[in-house]
Image (cartoon, rainbow, N blue to C red; front, side, top):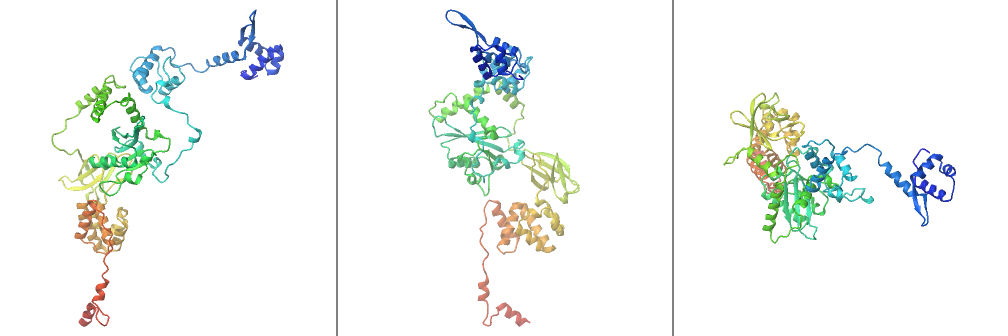
Length: 540
C-alpha cells in the first residue's frame, strides 16, 4: 500500500463492515493486504451498547484518533526531557517576573541546570504548549500578532519621492555613530487627542519623550523646532531620523528645514509600509512605555501628579534585578557612577592630544583613519587633538595647522580640508590643474582661476586663504562666486564682508550688477566720441 490508511479509507472500511462484507473483499477494495485490514479493525474497535446486549463495532473516527496520537511519538525527543526544575524556573521567570524568553534563558544559565536550549527552541516549545502553564498569552508581543491578510502581501509606497530606508547609509545600520534616531508616536487608546512623540537613539538607546496635544504634522514640526532651539549642537546630536509613513511625518520639506539657519537640520528616512521592525528600537521603547508606565490606566488631575507618578514608577522599575546580573538596576547604576571620575567645577575641553608624525604627503595616521595636514607639514611632528566630532592639528609650539571632521565607521579615503592646501597652491600655482581640491571649488570660481595667469592665481589663493581662516573655506568660496556673478573683481574688503555675512547664515541678495552704459552716453561729445577718447586723440 505504501502509505498509512487515510480517514476516507477508514470510512469506507466502516461502511463495508456494516454491510457484512468479508475482510478479504474490503482489503481488495482498499488496495491493502488482509492483515492490514484486521489491524485497523482491532485499532478502531469499541463496545457498542444496543440496550439488551453489547457488540464490538468499528469506528473510523476512533481509528483516526488513535492513529493521530501515535504519530505524535515520532521525531526527536524534547531537549527539555524530564527536567522539571528547569521548566518550573522558566515558567516562573516569564509568567511571574515578566521576563522575555531570551532574558529567562540568560537567567537560567547562572544555575546548574542540565538542560541547555536556545531562544528559538524555547519559542517553539511555548508555541507547541510543551509547558504545563506557559503559553503564547504570557509573551509580550507574540499573542498580539494577527495573521497577515492576502491583500497586504504587496507593500504600499506612500510617496515614492521621499527618501526610503533603502538609501540609508550602511554605517547607520551598524550602530557605530551617535546621532541617528528612530521616531514614532504613542496614540491614546481611550479616544484621547494627546500623543507622545518618542525618539530613540540607535547607538546609546537614549530616549526622548514629548507630550503633544494632537498628532497633526504642524504640531510635530513645532515640537522638533523647540528641540532644535533648546539643544546646543543640535546638528551633531541629530544626524538622521528614521520613521514610518504616518501622515503626521509626511511634511518632509518642513521637517528637515532648520528653524535657526539655512539648509537642513538632519536627514529623514522612511520605512516600508507594514514594516515596523525596520525601526525596532523605538518600537521596543514604545512597548516598554505602554507596559510599565501606562498600565494600569493613569488617573491624575494635573501634570505635576503625572510627573510624580512616572518618576515613582521609574524608581520601582530600577529596583528590579537586571536580567544579566544578580543586582538591581539602581545598584548597578550607582556602581557605574561611583567608578566615574568627578567632573571639574570649571568648563573644560574634552580632548585627547596625541603626537603624530606626518608622512611625505602631509598625512597623519590616527588609528585606521588618515587626516591631511597639508604638504607644507610633511615629515613634521605634529600634535593631534581628538574631540567627539572634530580633529584639531597643531604644531608643537601651538600654531594651528588644520581643523577636520572626525571620522567614524568604515570611512574610506583621507579626511581633508581644501583650505589646508591653499598655501601649497599659492607657492606653486601651476599645480592647480592637477590639484585634488579642484572639485571643492564652485564652478564659477573654478572657471575664473583657470583663466588667470600664475601671478593672479597666486594672489587669489592667498586671498582665499586669509578670508577662509577667518570665515571658513565654504563661506569664502561662496562669497567669491557671488562677487564674480555680480561682474565685480574680487578684492579683500568685499570678499571678507560677504564671507562674514554668509558664515552668519545670511543669504546674499541675488541682485544683478548695475548697468553703467548710461554714463557712457552721458559722456559722449557731439561727434560720437567719448571725452576719454577725445583726450586720448589730443595726446596722440
